[in-house]
Amino acid sequence: MHQFGNAERGRRRMGVDTAGDEEDNLLLMRGIPAKLIFMLAAAATLVPAIPPEAAASGAYPYGPGDTVIGTPRTHTIKKRDTLIELAPKFDVGYNEITDANPGVDPWVPDPGTVINIPAFRVLPNAPHCGIVVNLAEMRLYYYLGGRLVITYPIGIGMQGFGTPAGVYRVVQKIRNPAWNVPPDIRKQDPELPPVIPPGNNNPMGHFALRLTRPTYLIHGTNKPFCVGLRASHGCIRLYNRDIAQLFRLVRENTPVTIIYQPVKVGVRNGVIYVEAHRDYLHREPDPLDVIGSRQMVENSFHTIDMRKLRRALKERTGMPVAIMKARRPHYLTKTEPSCK
Image (cartoon, rainbow, N blue to C red; front, top):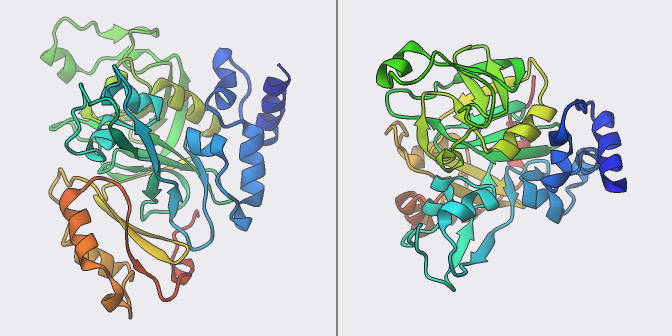
C-alpha cells in the first residue's frame, strides 16, 4: 500500500488525474510509477541508463541528438507459448512480433526457439510533441517532455476504412464510452444495435480519446488480438491497459500527429540505424532517397554498409539495423523536431 501511495502522490506532482476507479493504480501495475516518470523527465537531459521498470512498460528517456530508444530483447519459447499470446505480454502488436521473427510459426513455435522482442526502435520523423502515431509500424508515441517518451502498439483501419493521416488534437476524454454504430457498419452487419452501451462487450473498451476529426478516436478494445492488425473501421485501438495509462496522462487539446513512415532512420551514440516496416500503401519513395533527404549520409556515404541497408529494406523486420557510424554524431540537434 505504501508503494501505491507514493505513486498517487507522484501522479499529483505530474498533474495527472488521480480520480477514478481501480485503474488509477495502472501506472504502477504497468511497471512505470508516476514518481519514476517525474524523476526521469527531470533527469532526461543527463541521458540516464534506461531503468528496467521503464523499459518493460514502454517508457524511455533519450539523449540530445539521439532518436533511437530501448534495447534489444529476446525470449526463449516455452511449451504452449504462441506469438499471439506473447505479443500483449511484451506490449507489442501482432505485426511487430511476427515481422521480427520471420519463419517462426505464430501459433506453434518450436520450444527452445529464441525470438526477438521488438523493444528497440527508431523514433518517427515527426514533432516530439504530444501524441505521434505511425500507421506503417502500427505504433503510438506519447512525448511527456523532458526527453521522455512512452510508446504503445496499436491497431488501425482496415482496407477501405483507413485511418487518416493528419494533424489533430484531443478534444474529449471519455470514460466508459458508448458506441454509436455508424450506419455504414450497421449496413454491413444489420444485427448490430444502433448503440452498444458501455461494458466489456463494447468494442471501444473503457477509455477513449476523441480527436478534432470527431468520427475517429483512440480507444481500447474488446478484441486485443487485433492490436497490430489493420482491422478497425478507422479508429486507433490499444490494449486496454495501455489506453488506461494513456488516458490518465493525456490532457484535452494535446496535439495528435498521424503519419505514414515505413522507413525510419535514427541515430544513437553516433551510430545510424535504419528501421523498415511493410509499405502496405506502396507510398514510400526509394528508401535511399529518404535517407539522403534526412541528411543521414551527408559527407559520409562511403561509410555506409550497403549490404546491411539492402537486407534491412528487403526483410522489413521492423528491427533497427546499424548501417554506419556518423562522422558528426550530434548533427541531428540542429533539425530535431520539437513541440510548438
